[in-house]
Image (cartoon, rainbow, N blue to C red; front, side, top):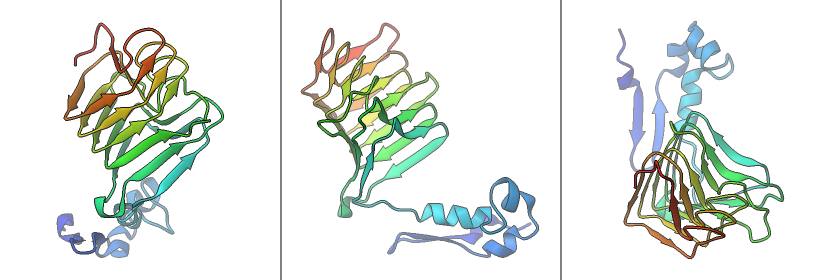
Length: 212
């Protein structure tokens, strides 16, 4: 049997990944060409393209209800040399940049709301289920405004943040910057500042079942 680990190469200088023998390995393989891929782009070709997908120093603007609806697993990493990836919410309707019911891991990104964009009901980052897991590193979330709770972040799942800045969030109810309803919230070397709420927790509000 072939050891598939030997077919994957990484070039540290360029940061490029390559999968050798993509066509040969996928030939007459139903999983590669039907279940996980297509005849014109088998699963190994799609995997290689995904490994090499980069959005370095880019601005991603969205004016839809949810820019990203993460039900599976999404990993985002921005290269420090080329600048953070900026996710800019400009919607004239209620909405979040990320709604997460699966797993999200991100490093070196910025999430913000354009000043004249509409309120989101629950945060620019909306962690919507107790089973969801989110890990953020070197990330900034700023300027969120919620018509309910959690101006920048509304979470009922597990949230881990390290070296992050959460600032300038507003909410008509609890948690101007962060609303943690259940599960575990971990903050390591983070700054949470400048939040404002209509009721409790200008910067941070935790529900009775939250573990901080």
